[in-house]
Length: 448
Figure 1 (tube, helix red, strand yellow):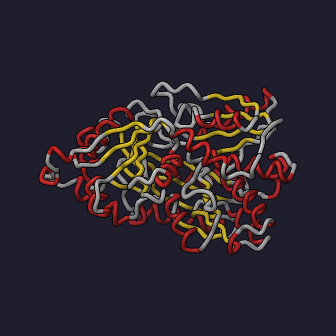
Figure 2 (cartoon, rainbow, N blue to C red):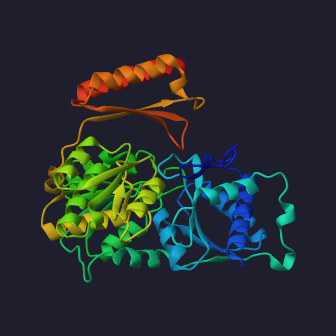
Figure 3 (cartoon, one colour):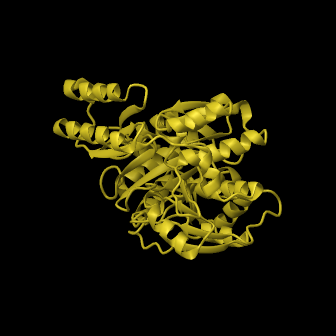
């Protein structure tokens, strides 16, 4: 059994591994790891999104950490990138986020950041996993006098807001801007409206009334059409849709057009290159990066490097190549000069900075890139088997790629966090691309 996937630990609430029993053991294992690594009493910060199961898992995680002799700092609902920032800002040994990002409320998960605001490496994950899954860990527990304490951090949202403002020029103001927000009833529901209001923007917001079960439900970055309608109706200048834990962003221009992460990367990359701030003239994307983005950057002398899907892989490559901009089409964008992880609110601020400095609306900025039509279909599977070992499936993938020749591509992969097979087809026209994707899905349904 593996606990850690491509983005931490994930599962359905009250089912293994997202049960109080399992998470208690994870808490013990995490505290044990940092206790040994740092040779002192570990101090660990815990934040969460707005899921109903967050209370349960937060208590279990804290019980495990304190049982192991670690101290816990609670910050309550706060975006994932806020926890990454606070881990460094508050000089703790680790920051843990209880969230399943864009997934429905029934799901939950755990992401762990080290004291530098970076996600744990695979070696650390394997060690935590080994201890958490071991049959008997009671012998690790210290005597009663060395049990840890729980504390609550009251000024965490304020610290994070000050950090976000620090990514902007001094005296930056959004006075005169009307901004529409969709906070997905998730972790950004308080900090995002507060921040933009403090910057003097007029804010209209939806998705700011979490009840534990409405996170990501027909709202947020997965459903930006709702924001687009509100934006056009209210005649706002720009709109921003966040996901449940606030690490991704989907922008909407003043005409109601929904932008992809690749369009945001194109806008930011061009701006940074013109300012002489795009270090080494390199941008990092993933295997899902649209071919149109690669062609655009080739024209302006920028290399695009691709990694597997997952922002931790993007970050690894960015650090390796000395790159300051990278991200995913889904809206995870990393501005490494400002933060160590994808941050939806920070990305929104960078877009607004570019809009102000260029004096152009988002609808004009996005015209610099022409994306290839891309279709992504999901197929629910019972088990993630190696489909390449199934001859008809391997052949159907090969035939689809041959149909496109050099006019597009096919990418088939399993989701790292859900029991889904993702079929992505990129081609010269929407009609042809959709047809090929549907044919592939039909074939794969027969065998998976």
